[in-house]
Length: 316
Picture 1 (spheres, rainbow, N blue to C red):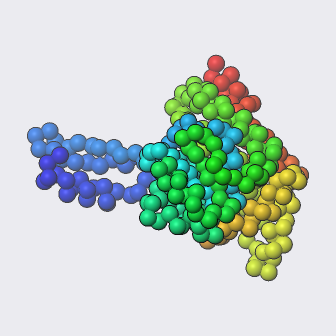
Picture 2 (tube, helix red, strand yellow):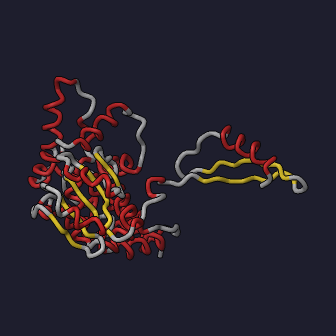
């Protein structure tokens, strides 16, 4: 495009209304000698995944270790990733943070930590840090306490706290693991049944979203009370799930900054949030005939079982 056409083209983009996710805007551009050209720009349906590479994460860590790291992040622990390559560090760190959606990591996050700043890993506050393997010798000399060190190159823990397997509710973890083991198969079947492409990233994201829906999908039923009722609402929210292991997990998880940020954002933007999580949470509530059924992992399992098979049969 010639420089003379850049300014009107950019003006056309800036004056166009910002499209909703998945929608397209059309920009007219005049090309000398060929008349007016219409350029269509489509906004991704889920821009969260636009620059996330989950497969790098799965190829670097076994599924069991990945879920143990995930559990540690939910409790806002200190986690160090190590790898030989900068690209592996940055991709895996970004992918782990993306798995936390709809929650947001509230603490120090440095995907690639320069050696000159290594003392940061001695801080007592939560962090996610990526460190090149060449710095491991120096890392071992530092006074580290309660830090999970993840070796991405060899799929192992160099340091751990030995309780990572017991953090997540067992049944939910098993259901999530089952779906993730079948992620490639599910991506193919969903594409086949819907006649639309489905990436591995979208399948992985969907699995973790449904995991969180099982845990906090009923949040909207306990919002809107006064400050005086906040404590009783929190306790009612925790007790609304039927699983004892899930209630125990919520008791700890509800004390994190991630959970506090989640609640605060939704209190501020009552009707403004309509993302993937909000849609799945509403589907979840609509599927429950009564509050006594909450906490059962049918919604998560449905991603890999009955509802998927039914869609395939209907297409055939």
